[in-house]
Amino acid sequence: MYRVKQFLPALIVALGLFASMVYTGVSRVRAEDVPVIDITAKRFAFSPDKITLKQGQTVKLRLHSEDVTHGFFLRPLKLDEEIPAGQTVEVTVTPQTPGTFTTICDHFCGANHGNMNMTIVVE
Ligand SMILES: [Cu+2]
Image 1 (cartoon, rainbow, N blue to C red):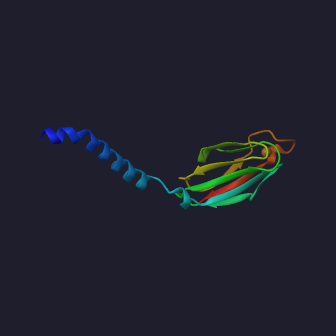
Image 2: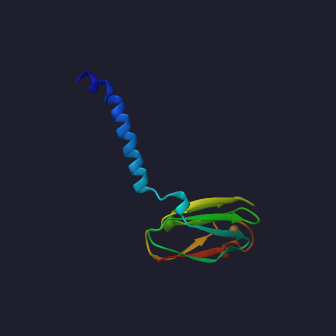
Image 3: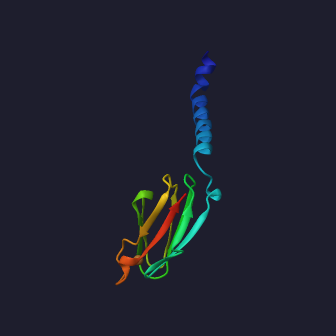
């Protein structure tokens, strides 16, 4: 009995580690398995201007600004990114609702800013 008590804390830690490893393996998509979609922002358009995602499939969006700071906003997909001038930001998204959505640039970037958008289709 004495020995069991002595090793109990170590046993609990080991079980916890094991459980967290299993949990991580089940719930997370491994980073290298996530498809990457490159999107370029440049006054006053996104390129490509339309992408299609699969419901429930995680993708990484790599957003790059070729000129000034742009926004990337789409409430239904909980996307609200700022793409700083000349920089690249990454955001992971797992769309849950099928539909056709319009992502807008919500960071004023010039005269034609209001027309800067792209379509994300979730099927
Ligand atoms: Cu813009």
